[in-house]
Length: 135
Ligand code: MN
Image 1: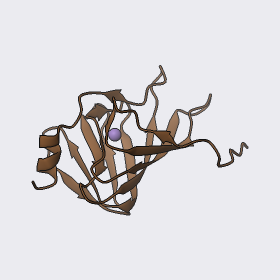
Image 2: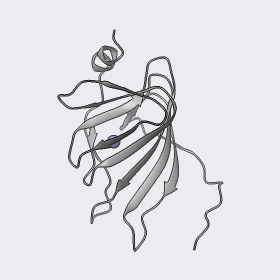
Image 3: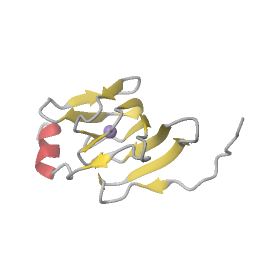
Image 4: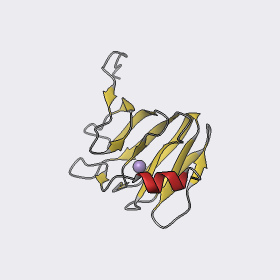
């Protein structure tokens, strides 16, 4: 058993991978016996990930606010607290807050053999995001 006390600094989502203000707190870190990684992620209104994929897929569970998610070629979906979304391995997608509401989700995903849990692509453009918000 290992207890990790609250106290590590909240990370800021890097601007290469996120648009807007995103706060990330680690929840689970991979170890010798487990490839599970998890994080609690807060998106400010308007904030979202870049397009990306996960080698073993990802589950997000919304805990606060109102969010959006989209897989490449699919419709934008509104997601709310209690909703969970599974993104298939290798499925290009993004997730984030709506333009006028924050969104918090728990993100859970497995690392591959090289320790990577995500492969990043291009940013979600303002035009794509505006369309997602019904603009
Ligand atoms: Mn994802």
